[in-house]
Amino acid sequence: MTTATPGGIGTIGRNELPPHLDENLLTPRFYTTEFEKAAKTDLEIARKDFEAMFKEMEADYNLKHFDRKASLERLQELSPEDKAVYESYLVRSVVSEFSGFLLFKEISNRFKKAGRTELGQFFTFLARDEARHAGFLGRALKTEGINVDLPNLPKKRAATFFPLSWVLYSLYLSEKIGYWRYILINRHLKANPDKVCAPLFDFFEPWCQDENRHGDCINMMMRCWPGMTKGIRGKILSRFFLWTVFLTHTLTVCERGEFYELLGIDPVLFDEEVIIQTNNTSRNAFPWVYKFDDGKFLKMRLDILNAFKNWRKESGVRKPLALSKFVILILKQFVLPMEKTNCIRYS
Image (tube, rainbow, N blue to C red; front, side, top):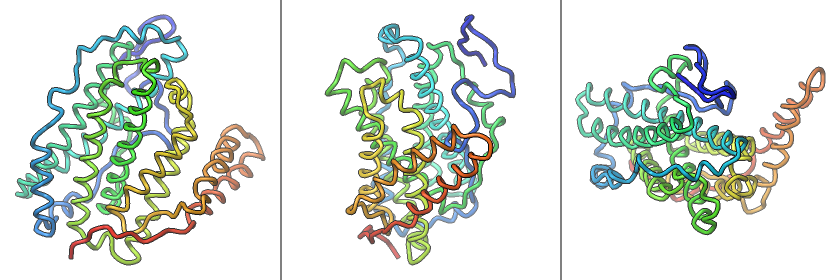
């Protein structure tokens, strides 16, 4: 593995992480789940929806979309500081996409071994898209002198186990929040073409649709397990994963605010819009979503962000106090009011 260093191309030790990727709660991770349970998915509950989604994924609309030979001349206009910000975004993004590829590929393999051919092929389509995204991002990184050794990266980062219900809830949100993040960036750059600093952004619109379709695929899978969205279990899972994903998004976007500022985007306002749209979209899949009418949830984001920054910069005896303030705030946000949705459920 190599990376650009002040003196040129340098070598990274086998056990080291790639540049711009350190170990913290906001770092992209690799996941594993209850594969045997997943293989028992009852497709007949959502047969019509499954067949429609299967045909859409089989069509592979983005087969020829990603141009690996796109000109990279625009990057030469970036300052060294801006290039570092752009590279950091690429590294984290390629790890996220590759993580999705590995999970979908493993689920696909387990389905096929269990004789669930249709489901196996379905998740092969999902893995195909994630691999394509990771490959395109990897190519962009190589032009920056950074070679992320993706096949060996999971060996350096232990996989996190999630129960199947957790995986489906988190995957749905990951794909849908990814869609809104990309589509809002795409709309902004179309309105401000002078901010399109890299060819990566020329490919965002169809990329957005991949994320959107993947979310719909996961929603269909959730409907095959109606117990996941019923009763108190559904309410707790909805609350927990919406809160977790929104909290992580706020901290991540604002931690990497320089990237959004590079594109001429206010990271705080961008984060708010992404959260609002994702919460609204989640009405199609989750039995409960957060209630934003009173503005408390969105306003509390700023208090949480400031408390997080204070905790990060404090030291000595003041650090635990700063951490306790941060924890109290996020717990207050967690219990804010929710409202019931009318999402489709099969039984």
